[in-house]
Length: 117
Image (cartoon, rainbow, N blue to C red):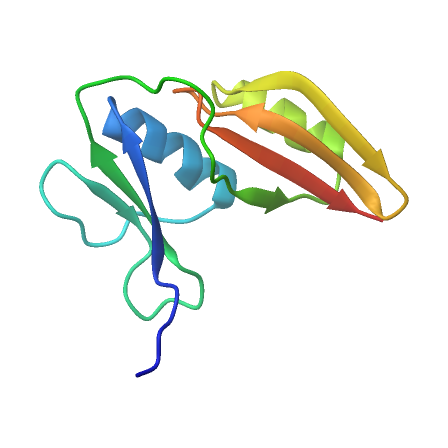
């Protein structure tokens, strides 16, 4: 049996708002979706789909799994996330090979912006 990674599902209270944030940030259009859900991408895409699933309770605590988003310029990446309604958490890590900053989307899902040198 061949297993393959096909998607990541994100729980969110406001599915349209959170999906819109990620759609704009990653320049990924919405694909066919179930009612009340939003899928970015579709089966057969070269990248796994992002799936936004409605839940009634807001996020509590730190998520133990997160996305890393590669950017060409870390400052421009931070500015774009903020303009989309996300925020910079204040956590930044500088390494010889690049920089990683921890961001949060409009419902506080943490993710990293990564700029490799």
